[in-house]
Image (cartoon, rainbow, N blue to C red):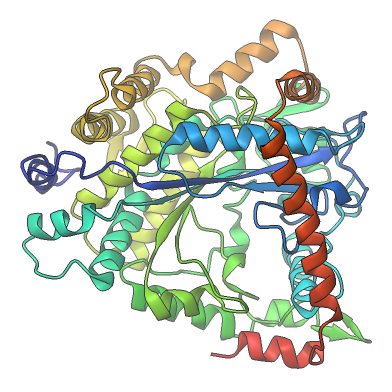
Length: 527
């Protein structure tokens, strides 16, 4: 093992293997949040309201919207197997398509045709205080960063280790306590190692090397090259979504949130939410009776801070994420680096999910020194570099102030993951995790096997623009889902009932007595 992956990783892995608990990694909980823009038959972002047949975006547990009224978000429950997760996601797509009339779900992360900020409708959640807060927050995002960035779609992978993992890991690490503090510390070790090594996700799975010219209209600092009159691209790009053109824009460069511990994380996040911003205060908060943002602070709420990965706990009603973490510790992690894949009908596939599950275990088992601010900036830059230039021959990244070749580092990570994959496929003769790992190893050997390269090859072969490519696949997937055998009657009826129940829940919420919005907001934001 090289110095980029601590030799103690081998000992930790061997400890798990020799523990006698053969299925110590089996049964971790997995979930996905998948976003897609609703678009018109002509490929423009939809200006229609969230379809009523899909239920209430405010109160539906599994079918909501993100920034835009047109940005549908499918949220799966947590499953112990990835095939169950993908089956549920498929059935949800079938249900959504049956309520879209002539509209499509856009098949890529980078958006369809846009006509500036005004063409992107902000999500609406009704007249309740919590609904108003969600919409005002989005108004603030648009005024702070522009709406165009918020039209990007992604896939988030949620993961928690199985219960039997914790006491075995505690024995391996020679500690007597496998309780919540130990679990939170382990998840924060994972977070730090994701910052160190997570750039590999952009290389292996990034699938947004191109954009419509309309995405950067009026900008001359994008640094992209012309593919055709309607399409711009990064010649060696993997994930423009995760680059400085997307979520890693410079507007949050001065917001540094430590992942050295739960205490540090909550402290830094709380400080950012409570620290006034001269720039954002100039926008105003409530102006002539109209709410423009939740506050004029560096962050309005926790979700405004874009991170590649987040520590999470299910919140109680009206509870902020940091309060939930402070109350009961980390419950799971949310990996946020995945592009929506136009190469997969539901935007993600089983091999990808298996790799991410193994990668989470690799990050948790690898010793994870604390990260100071300077090192954090350097590690974050590695992510941006790979997102912009990941397929560049001989690409160099930064490791503790030293230049290292990206592909060599990537090979070390994949080699280390082999033992983790073997543990995850305990008892499965088909060895699916090892197969998923082998598929990724081929991408290190052959850059043309990466999904970003495959997209560019497809555009070369067909002569399509990025927009034409996205339209073809979006139409094709609509036909695919509409022609699939429908979920059985019981499942479909349950989806309809869930949508109807959410509409009733929103109506009940709006009829209930509520304090003035300003009072509600002050109470929510209070420490």
